[in-house]
Image 1 (spheres, rainbow, N blue to C red):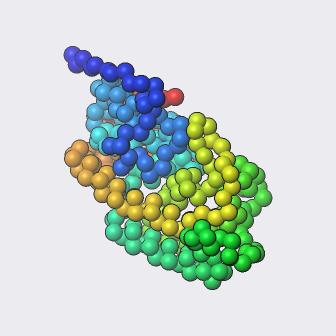
Image 2: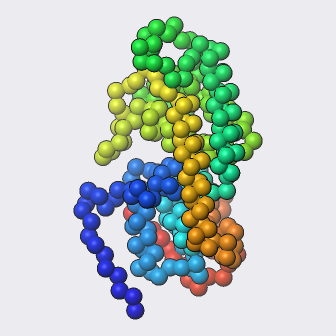
Image 3: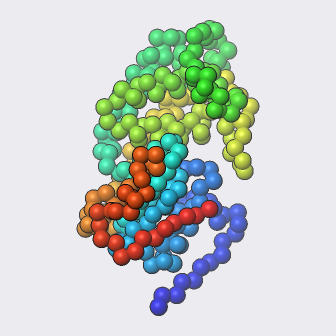
Length: 277
């Protein structure tokens, strides 16, 4: 019988993301997500291995299924919220070629910058130039029904305009759209918008402008770097010896029924149902 010794961590650090976990989990992470090391602890307590399958029926931004993939454990995630579904689905897709992803993203950035410059907008102006720019007109906005879903003043008009221009160019990309969309979502909540976190979500003092395309491209480069790390981790866990190439899957519960989820293409000794607060 295996005996585990669990060290009690201080309350201030127990939910903190470890630096060693950032490569796989920091692509996009909900501020109230439980930490990856908690998932690892549960997997060890239940003796979960590659002969099992972990089902997370509310997988959020994918902490559980990412940890399972890192360990070569088959898993299934279900998520209803479109943004969380995008995040969790993308975070277990380590297939992009890093150099190709960066090249495509660079081309997207160049097209978006060209669109902005034609309108006299600089993506990343120097602070002392903000007051010297001419008055901007006809900035793009969200449809009223969508705008009502946002916290008031959570993003300023000029950064929103630049974001919508960038989204159009991302949608034109032939490959890796989910990864580039996720990088933009990460940049939006961290630097582009006026949001602040701690301990609850709120709105800080509105900023008249913020870099958008450069901030997004920086997040894409982060994916470029960490996707290679994740792929190496996958090889170290002997992922290629598993019975199915899609051992970590994510479904939107509006298009996939639960009975379908419980018929994976591998023979399972048991299903571990994960529901973490």
